Image 1 (cartoon, rainbow, N blue to C red):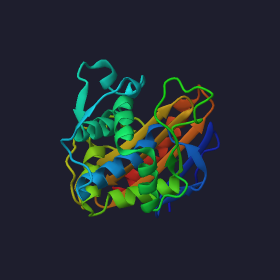
Image 2: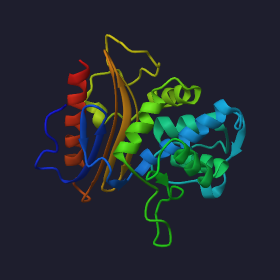
Image 3: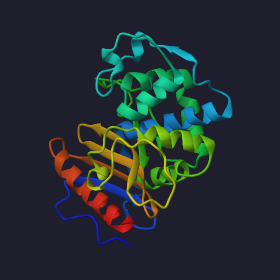
Image 4: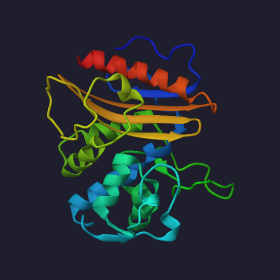
Length: 257
């Protein structure tokens, strides 16, 4: 097991599940920010490999899909993209507009039903992405636990066709500022290698919002580690939360070697 956690100066709530290595408040339910998009991506990947969705199906962007915050589509001129395009944008740059278009196409109920089929009982999407989020809206985009998300990531690291597709999407994630920041790896390596490796490799999905920093991923080297680290804190103390998350990344890197 890894050494004791958390550090005494932790600026909020940090829940951690690294199966076989580290666990801290792993069953506490927290707001997930964009890590909740993993549930949508899992259902899209299952649909693409199961024949209920087509990768090249065109999806027209509607006015209500557009959302500020992370992503590129809100600033691009094209108004039609494929299901596969939208999934890649959601995974790689956490595109809020792409997320809303996919969520509208697939359906919120279907996404949460699919999550339940994968064993997630407390982790779910509550609403579309909204900027700003008003009092009449659900209080946050998604909620969940580190234990359930780590278990989901173990499935994503497995041999199923949908999992291999999704792991490839996550390998293209451009945000390696949280747990992965302390793991020496090539952030542009979006291949999906097998274990063991003579290097370290990361595929992940992060979530960023005011008072929230979350990171869920797979690390491969001489062995494989899956992790889920979810943090909520007082607005303005997010960088301190990041520092605590990076200590976990350093410990994972040391364990894998």
